[in-house]
Length: 236
Image: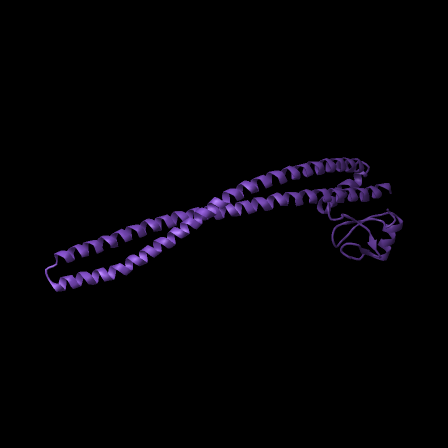
């Protein structure tokens, strides 16, 4: 029956459509990859901005702590000048000796925190160039991808038109069964032929009598293993 030949033709055209769809998807993945890279950098940039804010808060707290320590030392030294006894002077000296290393420690913390703030600022500044560059790259690739996508759509539309013409040649009594199977396996070879007495895809066996009927009498079977449509090996 001629319409079996049309089934193979439709299957071949469907596989060409699949190639065009796959190519389009691969091109779209390029955009998706860059968008994800950009978003990852945005998230990292936002994290760095938040870190800088936290560091600034730490810096403010450290500067207040330094001011408090310096004020205490200043007052202790002032009190020393007014002290009336050696014990008072010794106590105030001890306080100054205790506070002085703390000042050194806080000053070092301030310098380290300032360095971290500077690193955050430099990272954010460097990202400005990155974001500008990746935006230009995405726009350029998007132009390429859109062109390829439109070309593939035109080709697919033309192939779909051919398929529509072939489907019209399929008998109404068989069309419902075929449409159901094609919908399920459209890009995975819904039409198969026999390898000996086995489905060429899932290897499910049919009887030799059924195989003879399929091949010689141009009948068809629905594979009990995978559900694909088995047609005669004589259909080329």
